[in-house]
Image (cartoon, rainbow, N blue to C red; front, top):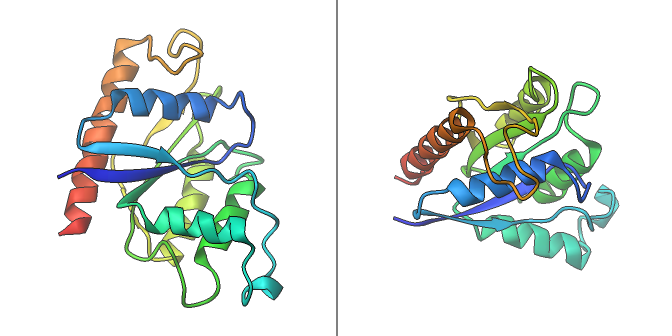
Amino acid sequence: MTYTVGYIIGSLSKDSINRKLMDALVKLAPESLTFVEIPIADLPVYNRDVDADYPEVAVEYKKAIEATDALVYATPEYNRSIPGSLKNAIDWASRPYGDNAFAGKPVGIIGASPGAIGTALAQQHLRNILAYLDARTLGQPEAFVQFTDDRFADDGTVRDAETRDFLTDWLTAFCEWAEHCST
């Protein structure tokens, strides 16, 4: 079975290391996973006053999520949590109340940081948010990636064999999780 996996990068930076991490995952992905980016940069700040008349950019964003079989979030860690832009995007896709694009959706969470603990705290916050929204997040293996120049090239190529093996194993587990959730 082939799965369409939407991926959302929590950073808005064009030079984001989490974008490079996603580039690496896309290159390493098995043939059963087809990745499509779901951008969040153009979403306005969510305001429930527009629930009855969503802006077109938010409608298209939500449709993009609904069109996928699974999601992967690549999140940086800002001040021990997820970026505000990512929380904003989640709010758009989960509203209005009763129209949640995440319900039952298999989700993988990964993140890169220059620091040794990667994005552990941001990922925990993201897991809490997605659990409330009834997303089915992959619990194990967790993936807190320390991003260094000796591990990743600028184009997302994984230079380090150990990192490549870890990411390949994570993708295999995610693929199995998506399959499990779809049955």
